[in-house]
Image 1: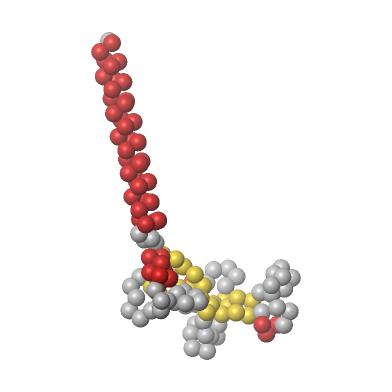
Image 2: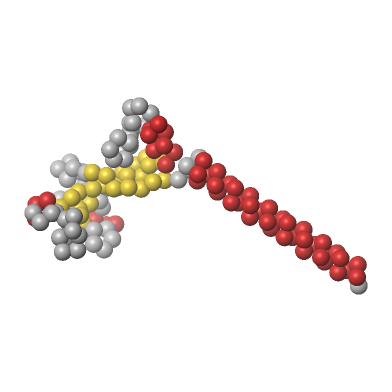
Length: 132
């Protein structure tokens, strides 16, 4: 009976050691992927020209937003969404030219994992509208 308890105790110890190693390995891989390699997409709003693009429209309300202009024509802003790999943002910030990250996020020519999302009336969520 005592021998069976020792085997059970050793089995439990091995189980918890393996479980702990798996958890630490998972945390380590995630840390490397997110913090070191910056392997994730950043999605942000960027300016949009409603004359040539299908833009999202935002109209601010001065009653709920103190930074909103009291002039009605200045309350409307147009934007599109840009999805860009975080590693590319870090790379462009480190360069002198700052291609694709000067001012606001943008895609540079032939950049992989970078795209714009324009307004589509079929995919709007509540409170959103499209230009034109």
